[in-house]
Length: 290
Length: 272
Ligand SMILES: Nc1ncnc2c1ncn2[C@@H]1O[C@H](COP(=O)(O)OP(=O)(O)OP(=O)(O)O)[C@@H](O)[C@H]1O
Ligand SMILES: [Mg+2]
Image (cartoon, rainbow over all chains, first blue to last red; front, side, top):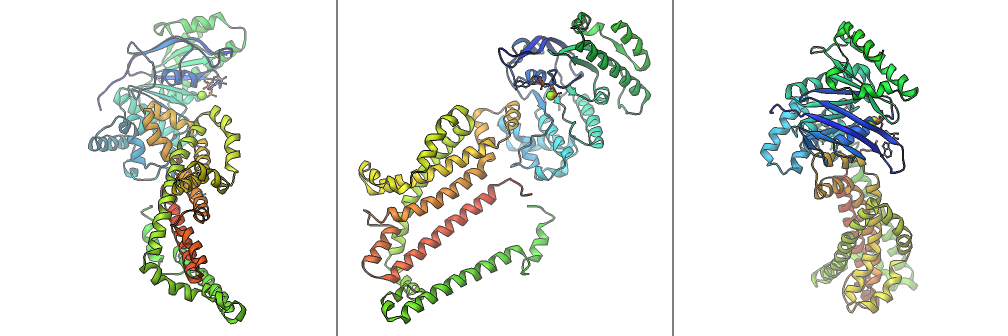
């Protein structure tokens, strides 16, 4: 599969679900380079899923826009694929049919479709399960099928809405590792919404902390760690502790008076955002909050 | 289905403990008992001089009637005419019922708007439409087809709507994301997702239609299974009458079994 990613630019995105309802989030800005893996962390209800739905073109924003490589997202497309908390496989189709459904929508010839599906199944280590009934698979295997179903479209961008949160710790760890390595290998952008700080550290090149109601991006933190990332690694542990601290800080700032300081942080562009490797990050982060 | 299970089942087949053989065995015994009772009834009719003229209702005269009824084409003709009416009626019911059901399932406004009138129409005994149908339609055939359709449309529509209500909305989101156009949504997602419910509705509809068909043919028409029974009664050929009744039972049972097979074939629901 060819290597490709996409430059993401979200400009002043605001959303409310009903015209008289409260803002879900307010003038969110973010930018990601081609092939970059973003993690978005935030408390429940701050609008993370809504943000992903808008980026996927499944929901229209109230105002603002999402551009991919300079082109505005107007609707859903197989070039940017979203994965959900549940795999949502089609139970009347076998594994291979589930994986190939997007190609089928695009009227691919049978033979090429078979090859593409086989390749996607190999990527997620499920080549022996092509003819299985999806209802016979474990939760982790089902989520792998959903991943293959997304990858088969050769997307530029994978939007993950907590797709590992319902899995056991072991399965989750292996999927976190695999998704990151596949995305890196194919050059795909990741935007990964999660509650799990570990996951953000293990999978992200950058972590955005979203908080408040309406939600805002309070911190933008570069996670400069090598691959593969192991949970026990001291550098990973240190990054985790740091992220935890700014997460709590953001939550406090959001629950207090709407901090102008927080607003400044989210306006700060990528270059000036806090950046850290292991322990040295403490300082740069400390200055950012001082 | 499962490669690991199939060979094991194959080995178990000759034994009575196998569920399939067991079911077949009990089915045959039950059928035997029914025929035994029938035979006993026929014998009682025969033994009592007052009812001896009805002894032809018994199974032996009934089975003797078959060569004649088959030979002169009575059975085949009756099946043909009734089959045509049933088929057309059901086809009409399905082509109206499935879209109505999908619309009910997809549009809340339509569902709320239509629920009360549909429930009311549903509760009108199909045969009570007969006088109206006869006035409206010039041909008896058309009237009977209308009666079957009006009886069969409700189970199809309501079952379709119920099936759609159970469809996971995330399936639409996923397919939209993967590039599904409305046509794909219908053919690849909605229809397979609700096939089980539609077929269950069709099975119910078939049952209702089959019940409506025979009495509907008692009047006016000069062909079909219902007519044959009426005709046999008027000519006092009681064994022809019971033979036709038996044919109705067998065909109804066969049609219902076919529906059951289709339901099993297209069901993706897991029994737990
Ligand atoms: N379809 C909807 N219609 C109306 N309001 C909605 C809808 N979806 C979400 N909301 C509201 O928007 C807000 C943000 O929801 P969202 O699902 O984006 O949060 P989240 O950050 O993903 O939360 P979680 O971490 O629990 O998944 C919530 O207050 C929620 O009640
Ligand atoms: Mg969410």
